[in-house]
Image (cartoon, rainbow, N blue to C red; front, side, top):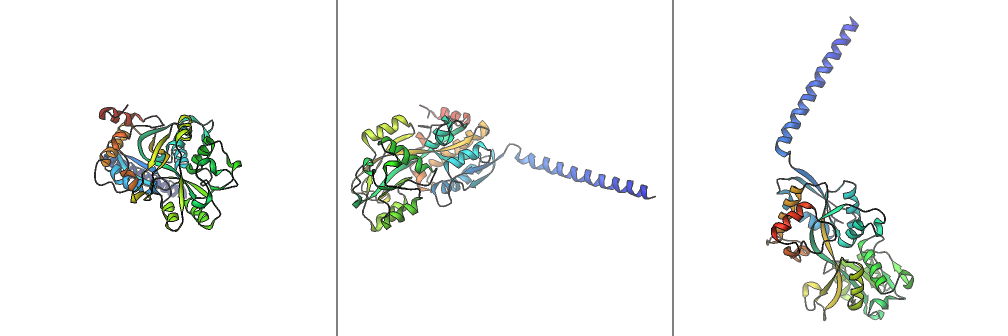
Length: 332
């Protein structure tokens, strides 16, 4: 009798499990009927107070209008290096990165030494401008004058530090030639300059940088130019650098008395090679169309010329992006 009861219980449990499995399968079929071709995208950006994160937030609804996209999750990250690593690890499908970091990743150099990454470009964005700011009483008039000075070079491993090292190298300098090197973020570099413990600092960002604007409120500073032979050396060795001029008299850009010639590094939208051609084609088209409207709210994106967003891309184009640019006649 006990054996019969046990067999009956097993039968009942089996029926219940079968019913649950049937419901689950039915639910899956119903869901896939609406979203079978859609893909969820994790969009790697940067810190929550930075431009990358704001741009991600502004592009999220634009990309989610695509029938190919189910949802876009804007993720705060450690920016360029972390974003490329996350794409490699399958954690992000799309990200914003600086071209110098993308170059190192594709070529297997720098922080990616011996470990090439198959990241692909979707589009170009605004330039991160190398801004070297010095206290006016420091006697620093050129990059070479940083020798023997106290200099902030950005946080360890950051895009700012990578730029600082390359600029110093082009000028024949290294950290050993400086009196003091601090690995500080923008806000801390500015505070140290205010306190008199730093003579100068590197900032690689859009223009204006709010931290520089803050420093200029009550302090006399000067911008150290990167031009002429120095700029030529940089651009010859590192093809991701481009000349950039911060114009004078522009109240939105420091309201300088005279223009500043320097170099910039293009930011890029990159995607995983595993995202489909049709999806990337649609994302590229929507980004292009969005840049042609008055709805662009984030300041750095207003600087982007949409008809040049296929130029100067360091990473190879994703086939979907390439198809769109070929149709628009935007490839050189």
